[in-house]
Image (cartoon, rainbow, N blue to C red; front, top):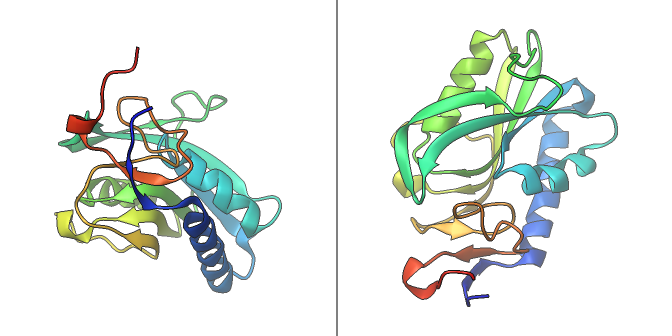
Length: 185
């Protein structure tokens, strides 16, 4: 396993997730009215740690938003259902308050596309909680309702975020430096 520069340690991540959950609960008297939508695969770990702190019987759905090839954003965002039992069906959000759970927001294109999609499907409201935000990379001005950490423009992995399917199991968020990483056998 290569050495990585730890940007945000495990304990700090868990404390911040608890704070985010408290802020969401302060805004939503009955969080069971929320339809939580995790953006897969990167937000899976974040969502798995966040949702139990919101209380029982929270509806959680998953959506895929593909906008990266390797370490580069490709500029377009393709959406598809990530719920195995739904197939390609659209998430039913009419009249619902949607809470989008993102791992990282950089250009803002994915969040803008998700907001447009869910509002177009009749959602009453769309809020976004993101573990990480890179404001210096923002190309689209999108509201972020709950932000875990603002970070500089560095490519990060860990805590569910990967590089080509690798390193998502890391318990902390680390900086990925291709020059320091050798190929795994």
